Image (tube, rainbow, N blue to C red; front, side):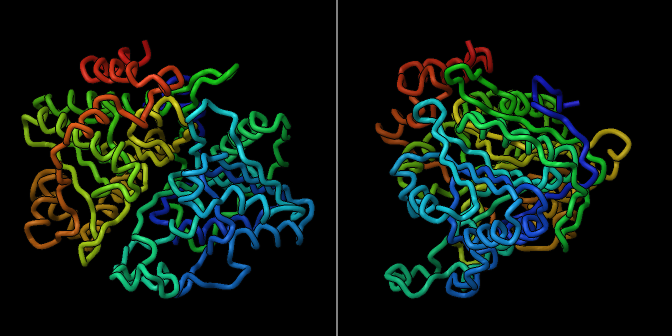
Length: 496
């Protein structure tokens, strides 16, 4: 098995039912339905949390006040005073908070004397962030993935160019030819019931204790209230939780997310499919390049944003991604590597914020960890994985394969049958995608590698903004040495 507690995961449990939610419209709706049925606890972990976020935005990003998550949670608390509602968010640096409407200040004001216990968490290494995205209801139903709670996160799987639900009232941006205030955005969230949900509840309680010193008891056992209207295609699926925790005070380093990436890449047979916000880790690049160099190794297909939406990320991450992709292209002696960025029908950017990996039809991984250094050993991360083994393995394998096809179809703007037929005729995922692109399905474009200037080369060489851990977070010269070692030899060069 890939999911081995103590190495590639923290906990491995069997989920009676599980699902993948593609994009935030489905996630917000399902989360609201699950929280509305809570009997004992609603516990939320997020990198960012904006209380004015609408579950179901209407044209102009408007909607009833009760549909805003802050008001919704306060109403739950008022209706059921025994309901334990807690939100734990990163105590972010001011420049980051500014990009999310200064959510730490807004949240504090929103939940004063409300029955909702809101805490900002800064108990972590300097420069690191709490990056997990988890919602747990009664330790019976839980969501885990890459989606934060904010108005700019909402989109449907159609990624429409002119969706009025992403459009605010008329602004200067609209006058300048930007019809939507919020870009199209792609997210993925996993949904589980039973033992994996309880494990995510334990994760929340551990983090709460670390942040506040308060020890929480688990809630009484409760029958899972699966959200209405959400299919549960995974049955009896082996589920793993893999974490990253940067070493801090008495808390040891945890690198389970990294270990699972490396194990999964090493064991892939046919196809490694990755959607991610960032591709910068020399360690992961080394592992992928090694497989691409094998005569009978797997295909590697990467999906990422054309360019990062923020200037800081464009400066620190986009240039470093050039080095990552160049490394894989050099290793691709057998023509098995493709990297794409998705666009809307009119060619506008789609922000790929999902952190999703599919290995063959064996492993589906959804979480918060990016393919960069800090997500492997510095920030606080949690990934949820479904492995198709055991008595229900055949059905779960079929579902993993179906989901990969569905994701590709949603990118290309065609139906799943068209993708299946193209991949079958071409004999591979990458070749099938290229055939469809040549046939006119042009919403996936090869990632353009722009030449790096002197500043870009320096940023990429030193991985500025992307530390491996506390030891190099303020010592970029160490990071350059670690990156060079990872690029040559792999994991031991990073952890030594």
